[in-house]
Image 1 (cartoon, rainbow, N blue to C red):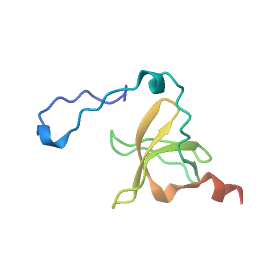
Image 2 (image 1 turned 60 degrees about the horizontal axis):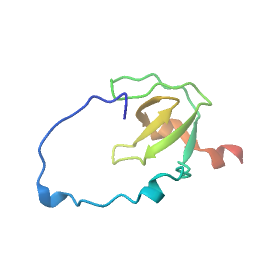
Image 3 (image 1 turned 60 degrees about the vertical axis):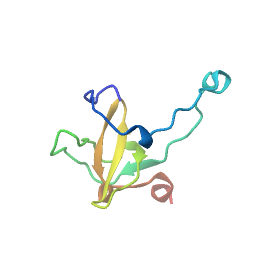
Length: 95
């Protein structure tokens, strides 16, 4: 992620698997559609890793909620954690 700090470290070799890249597959555009949520309340970030957003903002969900109830989401070119209780799936909002 371009806005995330670069982290360098060691990890056990048995925890990774080297895979060959298929050049034909990698040249095709990525058509994966990320799930989207709409903000039902505005949120002002309290920590550096959180994301501020206005009400009615449409956010792409990168990682589902963890045990503490936070999503990792993207809004434009910004990525950060958002409280899952401040958003709802776009489909639910339209109903």
